[in-house]
Image (cartoon, rainbow, N blue to C red; front, side, top):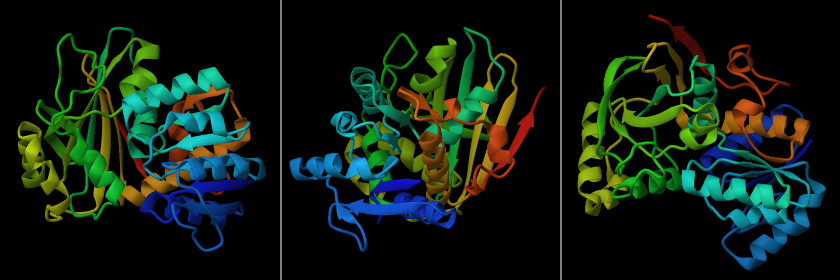
Length: 319
């Protein structure tokens, strides 16, 4: 298949491109400036959106790993599928509505959270009315791309978008102790979109919580949440901890939990994006879908699909 990767110079786009090429696919890299062997596609500019409209006919799938969030991209695809790696709930809701209006084929959320986290929520047995907590623990020692750092800093001072609670919930302020791969941890409420992507369709309230593997860094994030003016310091924070990450989805009622662990958030995100792109090209479903509509956690555990592998270990626990 033929893939157009926007943001191919970034950590996620570069990994996705390498994985797809290693699996025998053709990749056209794209970015704000023309990458070697690629084309210039700046989604923040009219000329860039025109370039995308002209390029899509030569590709089976477009991957947006640029960090630029513009729902108008749905109207530029001309029948080519899109995999969007954004983690912003409000934007993904807009993109879903745009997919419905245009009939575009779009995979919403591909990465660790949402993406792999969506599969974990799907795997936890639940009934309508249940509450599922999602503990996202990232490696504080990993150097993340500029877009990821900017996204995290922007959480401070903002409400969780369309939260299932009856009152306003602010990012990085509310704490909850949750089971994780390394034991019970204090995690901070954060605006990841799995409630939108999978919880509502199942009648389940999904609440996401964020921590790093460093208690000090997690405490610093809570301070930033309480004093948003400090958010500019996120990019200057020392890298304390490792590159280990873990995701755990747990049903509050049954205490059943499903956990995924691995190394290197950016690398695993790129691998997951590549897998979602392969499946998007294979299915060409009309409208907006999630990763959980395309494959299962067992596909990950078995080593992936069509030579595209996501390096993650899966474990399950039941009380």
